Amino acid sequence: MAETRATQAMRIVKALMHRDRASHSMGIKIISAAVGNCCVEMRIREDMLNGHTTCHGGMLFALADSAFAFACNSRNQRTVIAAAHIDFLRPAVLNDVLRATAIEHTLGSRLGLYDVTVTNQRGETVALFRGKSCPIDGTIIEDLPVIHKARSSAKKLQASKKRSATR
Image (tube, rainbow, N blue to C red):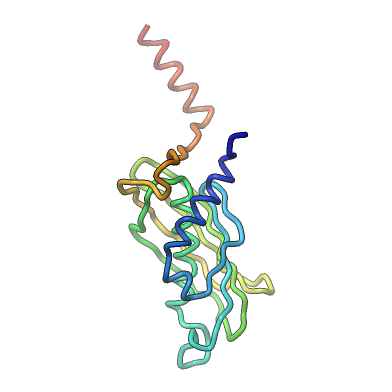
């Protein structure tokens, strides 16, 4: 039986996580993954606190960045960050369990756009992150093909009309 796209995406994300020392050191765990999406969690530890005894903003950025990285690499096309922005909306404190959910907003041949929402265990939004991705050569799992984005019905119709016009 053939693997589904979602199963392949999870396999890709797990392979990338296996090599990701930074995410491991922060205690990040994968909750779910699908093509273009990923959800991860992290508990705030004492060594993640700043001088105000709240979670350091760099830790929040790193959590969101990990969710972003797993989401944009979930198609098995090696992808890196081109730019990112984060808005910190409320502090996270010791023992908070943060969940970062990354969603593919748009994907083109040279740039992808992803939104990541970071929430705490009470469902309160802690931070909003937007990242731009850029594909590079190679794949995460060598023997697995890249999972291409399905073309929309409008694009399929446009391509069909273009083929018909050239005949």
